[in-house]
Length: 68
Image (tube, rainbow, N blue to C red; front, top):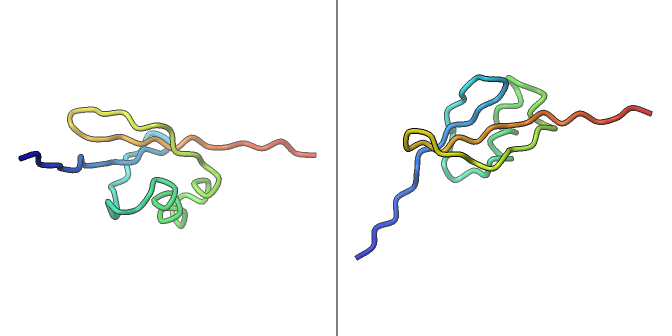
């Protein structure tokens, strides 16, 4: 029988690790959840996950728009 387990996730923004508030949320939803602490997350994009020490790490990259 095959057993499927989910890998624990952590989110990284500006070098700070943020715990996963809810494994059922998408990375974009997690960004919205943390936006009260980090307003820049509202426009940030999650990068593809990497795996380090058995933990899925999803980093947010700030999006900068052009003015004018």
